[in-house]
Length: 223
Image 1 (tube, one colour):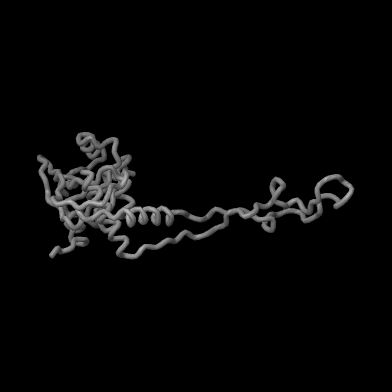
Image 2 (cartoon, one colour; image 1 turned 45 degrees about the vertical axis):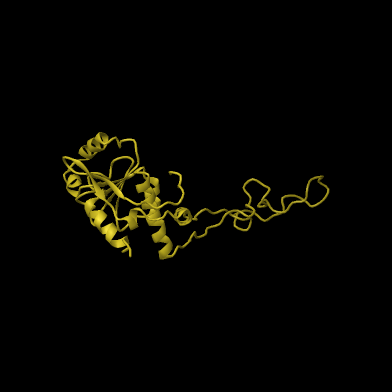
């Protein structure tokens, strides 16, 4: 995960635009890809997201849960040994565990404003690091087999990088089908994207259709 840089605002915001036969430049919405990077909210989102992924199913048995005899293992006196009760005591092998972990729920929450700030910060950070590329929808729709997508990524020197492909909603069949089995490539729609996935990716490929929906949803009209 790249180190988060200091807060800065960008004036001109653009990204490469990959088409079938050429590569040009496309202008991005400055309020989405050039907003101020809020380090605190971005780091907090990643922490909350990873915490909420924990299952909390780990469980240990106390001495009251261990199945075994409650008979005193030997007499209280005249043995020269320490006083003990039943075999389920924590100091014995197979006995209970003292203060061991028990099943619990990990549930941290963020409000809508915090989530929005974190997402805009992640998008702006990726754009600032020149890790955002816009790709024509028809280019991805032209791939029918996984090997064709692999060849395309190799030609773009992306074979050893973690790539996140963002597309418009309901793209699972027509766009993601030949891509989803490629190692280090994650597919997601713009309505299900989160800052954690963005921070994990080395390169973010956004389809033109997905970009329009993303900017329409998060754009702010500047006065």
